[in-house]
Image (cartoon, rainbow, N blue to C red; front, side, top):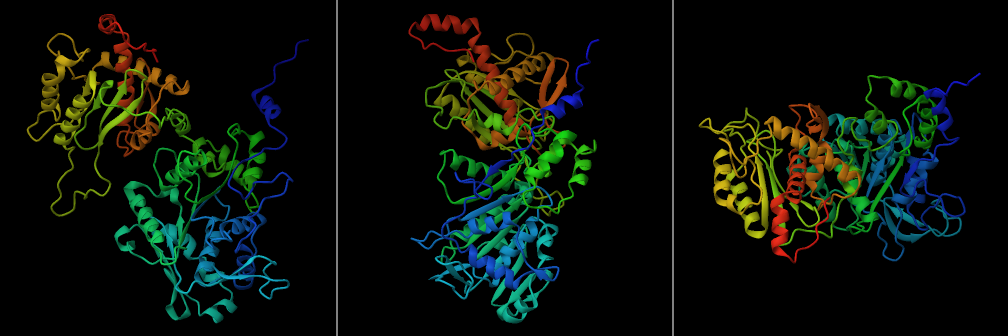
Length: 590
């Protein structure tokens, strides 16, 4: 009698470890060699813990942090005893939904508002009346506290602001004169304040804020002025009178490719950790599901117990039902409940796959042999120009043009529609031919038309073909009525087939780490934005939907440039050219 193979569910049960170990980023869940959680040697956090227990409350009861939050407080308020400065300038707390980020952030605001938020210079002795452990610093309030709760919408600031109504004890209100309003909290007869602020960078410029809580930075993107707002807040903190102003961000796992402030900060932290950038003092703390964790019932409870930390109030059975609900995309469940930075299900490449091919030590040099690919647009999509070096396949962005996020809306008086500045693009193309030896240049004209009803880019494509065509080793269309040195229309079915093959090869090259790029920020965003799309010849790339604001044009340029390099390397003209040169470099086909 034969035994039936185990079912998929049975196999999943067998593969689940007895205990899931989360991915730990930051010091909160890091243990030392003795197996105990590490903690800073000198921290104002001890005084903060004593103060919050005396002056803050939750549902009428004395405020108590979880053990996890206690460790985070200790690290956030760590001090360098030699300089007296805080060890960390900024912080990011990334946790799953429901962990309690808003209440935790509200307590930080309260401490900065009227609590012992700065070191007084004194150190606790034996049996100190403050309750601070011996040898630890004793704090004092900031003399001119100005605390901000910042978000890109009022709804987001409201999540934190409503907590203040019940957070302060009657003792705190009486002793410090706390007056709680909907958008501003005052103390000390108006000399101390907590205020809610939203996306108005100009209004924020020049503020003397002493602490800013950045709420839900995974929503802070360029189109809602999140980038400019974050930059303004950073400038305000940098120029603070005593240099002790700091920012603390709370966020869920961000969606890769949105280029949110949360994504930018994670990139900056990882670059510093890898030694690619200077460590500027970011305390990044996250508890994430391991990459092998599956969204199947046998895994879920163990994963959720691992990544929830000490937030024991979370309803695990209900979360499991939400994850298993087919209406919820797996990527969303991974971001919200596994606290993982997960690409969309139809993403062409994951951010870590593209990032692994980055080479900061490589750059185009004058005189390099390159190929160029241009993707044109009039207004809606981006226009891009990318180069690929023949010798090693390095992909570089030479230019990208797209409508600025703050461009006036059509109902604005005097509105002028945005159009890609063709003269600027023409200058960049001419500069590329002046600096490098361009062997091939394909340019897709797009579908936009100018005010005269002519194709928006045709005049420039004709000029480029006439000016540079004789220098090119490879022409876009060799013969026939559509013969052209550079015009390569991607709407042509034959070109679609060629490009689809190039998409496949570029994907393989990234996974095999044989593609290298210079790390251009916008190209990275466009590559991460690209989605897998199926056509008659296989898998190609496209936007998430036709009207999506997430551009992919530089991803198209990257694929096209790699395609041209391969065409050149396999061209009989290139073989003949190599023979004539004699002393040529050996080029490895990548």
